[in-house]
Amino acid sequence: MELIPVDAVERLEGGMGNDGQVVRISDTVRRPAASTTPALLALLNHLAAVGFPAPNHLGRDDLGRDVFGWLEGDVAAQGDEPWGQTDDGILIPKR
View 1 (cartoon, rainbow, N blue to C red):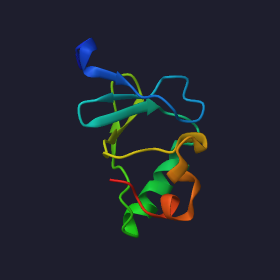
View 2 (cartoon, one colour):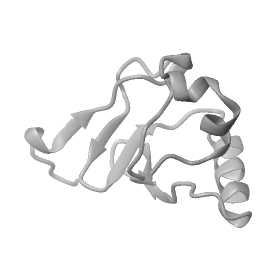
View 3 (cartoon, rainbow, N blue to C red):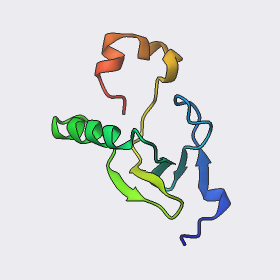
């Protein structure tokens, strides 16, 4: 089992229904696997194939969570950010 110091785990706020279960550990993001995971992976693979900066799926950890590569940027979750409510904000990746 992978041992991770408690202070290395950063809980990520926001999202839609993740109930605080999504965390950042170093340069990865970990989230519970779900029945929608195959569709999510297909979408991320498609986005990467057309040149959109999508996170890489790195597999699953010892707790069964999906592990993705970390991408620096901002998230306009649930329309909280004004820039996320414009066409340009949605279409242009924030870095």
